[in-house]
Image 1 (cartoon, one colour):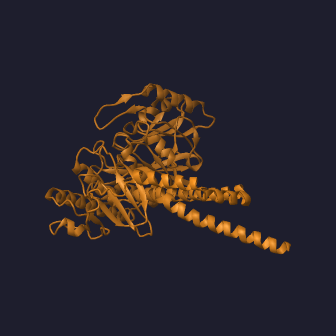
Image 2: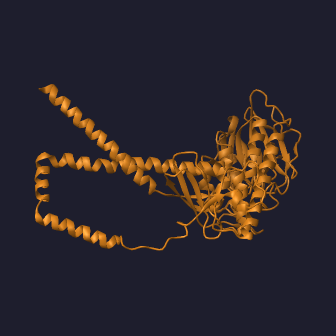
Image 3: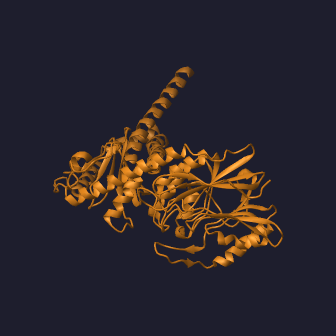
Length: 501
């Protein structure tokens, strides 16, 4: 008899678990398809919603046609693009082209959003599915029989009919609305939409486009964007191949090499090039000296996503530049896993010590700069005070504008000050401090090849650079720069020593 009771209990428990799992799947599926995530995608505020159709559909708004491509998975996504600060449709299309040529970071962002929604849906579905079972157990067999008996009474029946009537009135199933333009949308291949006069890149993934906008102007915009896509993808792919052939200094045992990037100004095309240079030089860490963006706005998250994706497996330290100023770039880099320097001495690569701080000034797309509550000079003195008071000598001071390190160098409290800002490579220049110690200043050119604040395009607008800094025994040993010309040529400067033994 006890065995039968145990068997019956196990069977009931198994049935309850099976019911719970089935209800969890149903609830999770419903919750998942009604979920959404707000992200910054392709220079837009965007909303991502999962679907059970094998398409990734991008809804661009009332002006441009919508796009979709196969998701290569059982589920897909609908991406509704929102506001952006692009000054014109043509500028927006050029952004799309450059991002589309180097899309991995944006793909990972959508994949991450879908994964988060899936996990959340399963957890919430499990909780919702468990509630009826919990109520069933708590009510008990006797009370359940009593409730079933009461449900058969005339009063309960009348109440149920009243609720159904109210629901029908609210839903209005007899109301027939006019079909929307979305329901009449026709999807065609990009080749069919663009027409024979538009040449498509040979390596362009299969893309479908909504066929309800066929103006000549739209075709011209698409032609321009496809041309930028094609030239950008091939230009930077060829540069990466050339980097694989350059001769750079080979690290010796005990050396630590750090790639220095600065002033990318949204040029995501240079990110795989920067990574290729870092790999070629044997780097294991990266310093980011700021101005990853042009205006520090959230629509520029694609730039930060891209550089993070390329250097995801590196040790990473960063400061923000005057064009990154605001509440977005610094916290976003921190969320992406960068060590954001904030005026305190921290452990650096290769047994070094590292100090840095964000640029206190604020700039936009013009040539103006505003200072914050603390002036540039005041922050430079604070850095010097911190460096000189440190328990160990500061190996590297990472800033956007190396002028922030002049006072620390004058006092002789730091080995090396590195930054960017000028878009022109300078140094390394030696400074003998008042205490007799020698420190160096090195300025990296613009990694994005930015002529001023804008670097988005099919190729760099001026020479682009990535520097390789070598450390040995916790001190800077020397630096070497790799230069990308606007025609795609790659050159390497001589390795310049900086006095380490």
